[in-house]
Image (cartoon, rainbow, N blue to C red; front, side, top):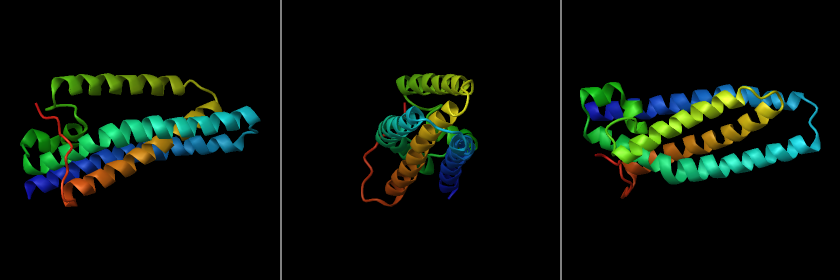
Length: 166
């Protein structure tokens, strides 16, 4: 029972983190439509949404991150410890107790994302909103794929994805 509570805390924490980003970025993204957009703004918006949907949503989340996180949520439900329980969202996202190579990738990717966020914050509207709407597309795709993979991990016949434990 303790393991399932840890797993629920892990997936809930991640969903709150991603959901918070979707909520905050959506508000900024919707401001884009209060500007008089030229044709090139519309092209940039379509490209941003398509690119981020594919690169972040499909390739990043659906094909890599979401199945691994779901596998770690499942693993956590069966192998809980006090540290993993307290930091369940961080454990599930791969910030500790993961193979060394993946941990390095996780931390580097996180630093890269923080750097990109700081750069995008410098953009003026409508460009910031155009980028943010693309990011929201990728995050919604990612959140959806994470929930579907997690359901598959717990209720599917077989779940063949690795939690990449050391």
